[in-house]
Image (cartoon, rainbow, N blue to C red; front, side, top):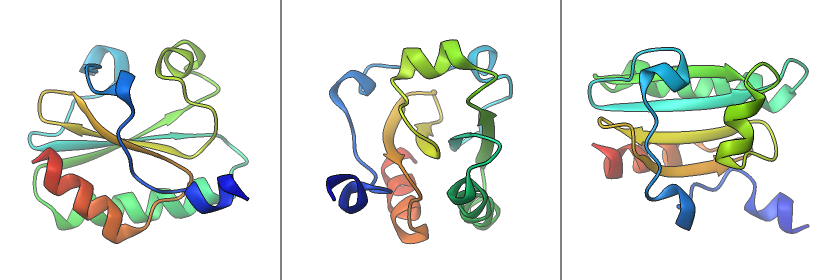
Length: 119
């Protein structure tokens, strides 16, 4: 029940506040204003819906990039970031600092609000 209620909510975790990710770790360039990083797996149904939501938001807001990372291929990074389920979304500012994260499928309005903190 707790997982169902908290799933998809964007929040900041203490250890994320100091973590910074760069293009080498992610395998792609960061957006000039912010970056939405999605950790997915091949058979994850909510991952597909999250991909569509994040793509729509990144298309709406100039300077925001959307990166999707296959969690199974990047297990070292998944462990370092403490990702326990897919989809997990990280919102990064222009410098690559983790502003907030969500485990589960986030709502479009919540992603836009989180980008307001990152920009």
